[in-house]
View: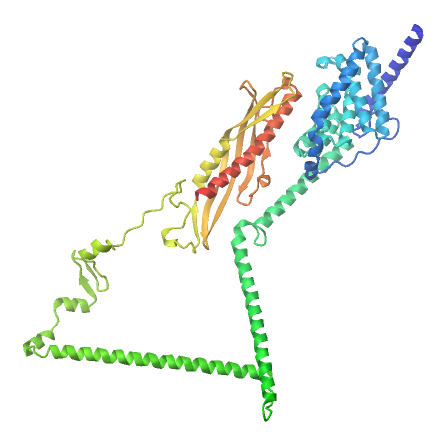
Length: 581
């Protein structure tokens, strides 16, 4: 019995060695395919990865990945730990090979749940042989094969986040393994992270420049990004065009719509008036035919012509009557003035002839008034039409002397009508534009500096870690802003570009990583949070290499939260801008 057991063990070891050798050959020949490495039949084709726009539809499946992975790992670990505690390294290798073969068989029959369980159990069987990545080459090669196959099965089940995490575990063993990089890149693409996918594919090409699968995937992602940029450019062009839905032209569109409605209403009234006149014409035709003797019928055009002539004659008669009444009133007023003048002459008949001669002479003041100039009380020479107030009038209504308007101060966040029209443009009908660049730059910079984001990670060994991302500096803030008033409406116009430097710290407050974000287009056409572009630039100070993949991933997740909060900070600046002016 002992001899038979030794022969069986030697046979399994030979099979395992041959299979591992096949894996290494397939990996070295650029096999970035989609089937388990040692599947005996032709590998099944991988379905086309979804586009970045479809990544949102996968969120529901990815939300349950972590919980499902924890439960599965716990069940598999408990079952394997009981049987693996007394097994030798050779027995553990044989057990892992058996689980891998079972997983390949389940994969061929499209039983992805069972395949996932088999690959995971095989991985758990080898954990004790590769503590701190200290296992031999056979153990590492088999572990990478199991984890890359598991990553592909998770992708088939639309568990893209779990697929990415499993591929990352394989890369912890071999950071330049082409198949693991390819698996994680495909998962990144499904999650909508095109930059991370391109980074993994470029790393894979450095190892195997002639790998066809990696090259095809990289070209596909580049085309997808270019198409999205073209769509975004077309959307912005439409937003700024007169025919688009931009807020800059909304009042003009409303004015054109109002004029069109007025024309349609006018046509409707004219049509109703024509119908009414035709009814009157029909009554007239019936009256003519029923008269004794009968009168000749008349056409509508002739009847309408006679009607217009009667209306014009009536209008002329009415104007003539009004003119006659006005002439009578003017004549009465003239006679009243003549009577008043005669009465004044009668009162002056008692004056002497000398006085009459003196009245005919003009004084110096009267002569100056006739020339159009006069002297004011303070000695100034002014026009005859310039009226001077008396002291009594000044006490009643105040001085009416013209005063110079105060110079318009620079815009501030006060409540004294900063954004309103000037005194000369109180109605707001004339185009007026006020520069608010300084205020907007200060407010936008302060809003970005106030941005702080927190991310809690439960993946650490001590029960959880909180990471905090803080904006440290705003650089290259350029652009301009203004408030325009025209047609009684305000337009808030701004166009800025800015870079943001941030820092990620751990619970002890020490900086773990730092980087920068670029916002190339902060303008008035971006009215929604999703429309604001925030480009993530490479790490300025990446997380320490000895901190593990989990810390790197946690920093990336914390950075994503910061990007969302930066967008919200820009929207808060827009709200302050609209409320202040």
